[in-house]
Image (spheres, rainbow, N blue to C red):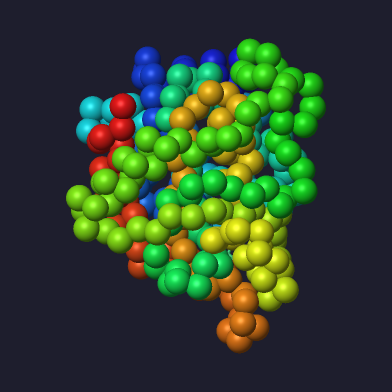
Length: 267
Ligand code: HPA
């Protein structure tokens, strides 16, 4: 981590980002528009590169509304074959760079029957069905404790802030529980019925590992899902990655405005 942090600090001219944003599938435009310094993951010692279409793979630093922000334009996923510890490494680096607030975003399938493709959902809590945990291994006491509490991973005041920003912008938002599977296969109808019984409102293949690590490190986490499709529940329509990207593309403007407003108001 020392090597990674030293390399990044050498590139960012004394900046100290206080807000981190991880941009999900099709939602990376914010980092194109607000980009002062960009460092490709490939150049960063000990980082892994992103391999999925629709994910760019660079760390972007910018000043947004007077706030220092670091954005991950594209994330690494467990299904790419990386370990869960590797995919959450950037969160630890953000912590070491001084990030206090982490905004996690993703594209997700809607499980709640009132959700429609294109809806935005503020994450109230999560269910980890990935089958492993990013904190497995020797504990680094400089980051957090061995058995971290997870009663409020997604901070109530940040949820309220996101809701009030959405209201101000007249963007309708839902709120709900995000369930993470490893992927890369989408769910079967039976798995979605199970997830609904579990209490999940949306399903995806990311976010939960990063949220666990960020909470463990003492960061304030906010999560927002773009509901890109109806999760396979009726067995009717089939699902493709291009559909996920297409929906994300349609809502990216309101999504971006919401994130910008939140960044402006967060403190
Ligand atoms: N399932 C899992 N991950 C997803 C989905 C889905 O339906 N949509 C976008 N990411």
